[in-house]
Image 1 (cartoon, helix red, strand yellow):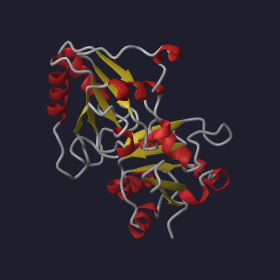
Image 2: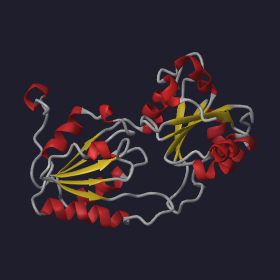
Image 3: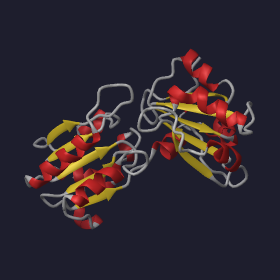
Image 4: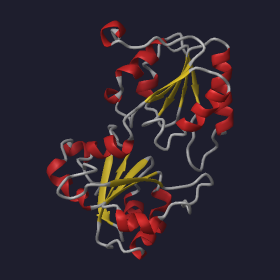
Amino acid sequence: MIDSARLHLPAFAPGSVWLVGAGPGDPGLLSALALHALARADAVVYDALVDPRIVELARPEAILEPAGKRGGRPSPRQPDISARLIRLAQGGARVLRLKGGDPCVFGRGGEEALALAEAGIPFRIVPGITAGIGGLAYAGIPVTHRDIASAVTFVTGHDRAGAVPDAVDWDAIARGSPVIVLYMALPHLAHIAARLVTAGRPPSEPVAIVSKATTAAQRVLVSTLAEAAEAAAAARIEAPTIIVIGEVVRLRPALDWLGGAAQEPR
């Protein structure tokens, strides 16, 4: 049990909702606030990408409700999830909305918070470690390095309809960002890579694809921008993945602190 007094953790009030980031998978990456919420929530509404070991940390009396959203599979509608959070809170429950990674980094946390605000439901946003930072760290790849890359761009790999997002200025990103981190992009990697190469990125630029980051099933595939999509298909890389493009990938051989737990597939 977290000593909330020593850590000065806030009360989790009945009738409120906490939007909490569960991180990329490893339960050890949970924040003290996340553990505090798990120990006190009356209802836990959790995403498909939240590691089952994290859900098991909820107190035994808590109601556990999956609200998984996975691309290409039947999933609850976002308005229905938001409405459920509101109903639970209006019934007096302490509601924990548990989201993979960080709630506000491609996690729809902003949408849910707006719905709660409009309904007059008190809420708190608890950041989590996003896969684009934590997952790559577990693969031995820093997203920045002062001698290699002083900027990084995080990009979603699909839009609301599941297609490559046209609202993204791929040409500008290709020209201006030394490191590009792609979320949920594996199905569209070939198309995205082609657009980046057309915009001037070298076909030989290194790419790393991290599957199931920070878990025991983590796999890391290193390839090039021109060949990454084909290599991922050949290696049967599975979602969820985080993909990084840039010279920082070349640091992985020296920084692969997980060693055999994160070897490239053969």
